[in-house]
Length: 380
Image: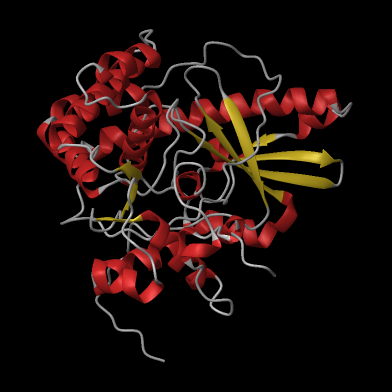
């Protein structure tokens, strides 16, 4: 295979090159790979915030992705705005034009504008992102509309990592600069009451504005491959005093409302498939027996073909994370292709859903968040 910049597709390879740049130093890194200093663009290392020579990073990253071929040399490809910049941006990295780096004041203003939009969205008030973008750029140093949008997407990614809601119109983009991550964390900690109200408002249980089921099924979010990023300092905890009993009750109400919506959805699905008589056999298992069965609703694809449905409901966006129990995971493996996880999202506004079929542990990145503590030691 002939070497080509287009073959570079690995964010992890780019991060490996950035790690090498930071570890060896700029001068030694450029000498090792035979590149000069960048004249126009630098790429930011999301782990350290350091700005690195963009063309040299791309050349070295190619060697990390294809060690059998080795790195790209400076003469193998052209750098600049038409080649290296879009390549790095497509892999989720921030590229900075030399002399136009974001200041702390600019980042703080961008974060504040983002949270104001999030407040309006939580209150279901109408606003235009383009108006906020234009107004914000008046106080920034000649930033483009696209660069501000990217920053807002980076903020969404930071909030997603903190388990907090984000603006649905700004899809999370990872590899946010260290300064931005610190600014978001500082805003969250310094505005605990506001953030608490936002979360409460977005979690509020309301029936959906419309009960139409046309075109509500969408594809699941794609699996995003990103370079691992270590958070600076201790992890930020949810900045409010949580009444766990009250919070659990809110979640239960939202979950129940979502299950009721799915039952109506199943009714229409079966009728459309000319199997309306099977709806009479549908069982709302979690309502009758509780949550221990490993699924919420028993429906059917044919008279002798059950469909075990676990429902996860959120007022949040398509890519919002959700909690799944060990019991539900194990049942998805046992039931195999008869198991369906229905992820219902944007429930309060206009519900939609995607489905995961079969063993969901093979389709999701699972992060342990709770442990059972016992006074015993397990030995082999």
